[in-house]
Amino acid sequence: TQNKGSYYALIDGNKTPKEMPCPCEAMTKGDGREYSIGAASILAKVTRDRLMHEYDAKYPEYNLSQHKGYPTAAHMSAVRKFGASPIHRRTFAPLKHMEFDEDGNIIG
Figure 1: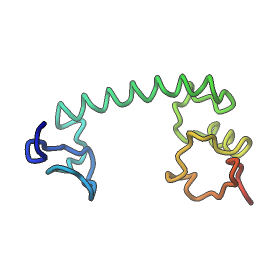
Figure 2 (figure 1 turned 90 degrees about the vertical axis):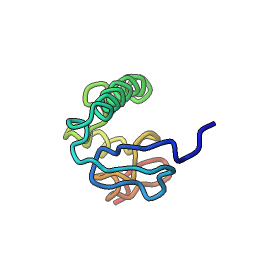
Figure 3 (figure 1 turned 135 degrees about the vertical axis):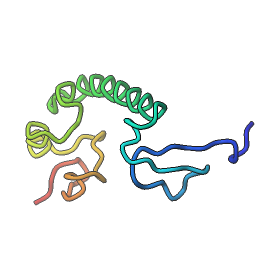
Figure 4 (figure 1 turned 120 degrees about the horizontal axis):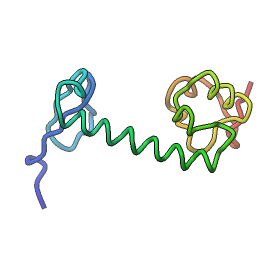
């Protein structure tokens, strides 16, 4: 087991998480400046795309394999029509500005 002091995290962005368990550094546009951030970004996007294809089979009304969950006009239209699914992140805009009932339907 290694101690916290032996890790150092590079964060792609302009802020570091407050509860980071090791020393870290924010790096704006880090995916273009640091190979390790760029590689992690590619892995994350490939993983997200694969997950969206799996979720598309479970929630076909949102057409997730097409837009990968980005808030396109078609995706937001589906959210307004069908409500938010259990996989929708309600803490991110534009959903964070909406109010939902316990079934994910938009209230109001």
